[in-house]
Image (spheres, rainbow, N blue to C red):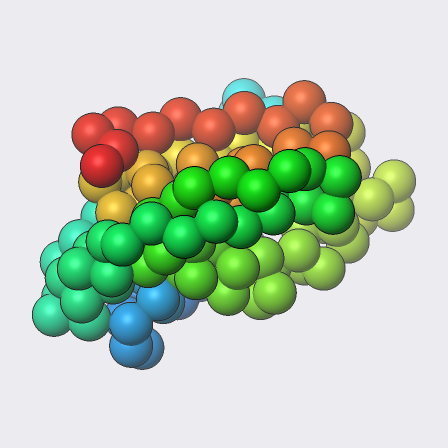
Length: 143
């Protein structure tokens, strides 16, 4: 397949993917094992569809507690709702993959995104930073 060839990975290294936007607060993403560099990667696409643009337009700020131990923080509500949704969809998968008996045992978790994906990825990293040791997030052109 052309996508996996361009990435230099095997198709089996794609653990989960949402290739098409399913609605607001549901950006496209892929979870893949980058065996060459020892990373489990969550890559989140930037704004492309009308639904993505509607997520961007939910730009009012709201106070949220990213984790039970955190105080309230002001965040972009559209991106926050996207991060919460992705947390619910992916946390268990990531935990299993990184467990000692998982397919990605010993790998480091990396979140990467552009634009909308950078904002959502940053907020997802805030939710996960106490769960996944050594987590890094790389955001390009975040809002």
